[in-house]
Image 1 (tube, rainbow, N blue to C red):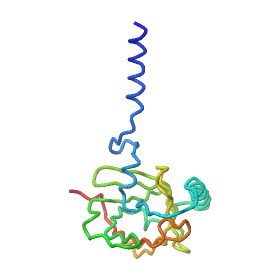
Image 2: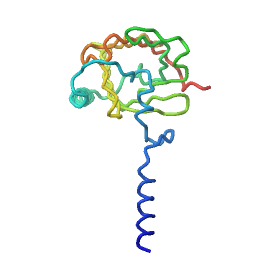
Image 3: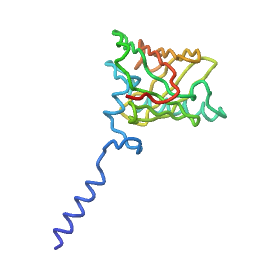
Image 4: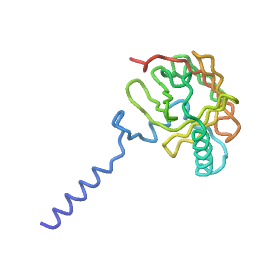
Length: 182
């Protein structure tokens, strides 16, 4: 009797600890997060990932504490990565069809593919130098710093040398009023 009760308890605990993506439930896998174009991994030697995550979080938290509200030009609608240049090759126009990025008024962002949310994080955009800091909640995703050139309908993200991780990358983000549909 004790063994069967113990076995049932262990099975219950293991089933509760599954790391599965259940759509928009808030549980996202590392694989989901890394599939998003802005989270592309580049090879190379960088500072400790833990160090740059702490540094990025400190910068974002400080900048957010100085702002009352996020910029409406970012938070209105969704953004689609139409073209991605990873430093050596350019994507085709439809390669990232269905992917989207949503900046929220509370300085958080979500991203996904069609109806599935793949991940989320914190951001800050500073208009005076066009710097966009992004820190994904998934610890395996390196923080990114972009120069974000914005004209209302398009954002051109140019990778920064600050962390070296996305240096040389460029992404053309096109504004959408709603999430892409299949």
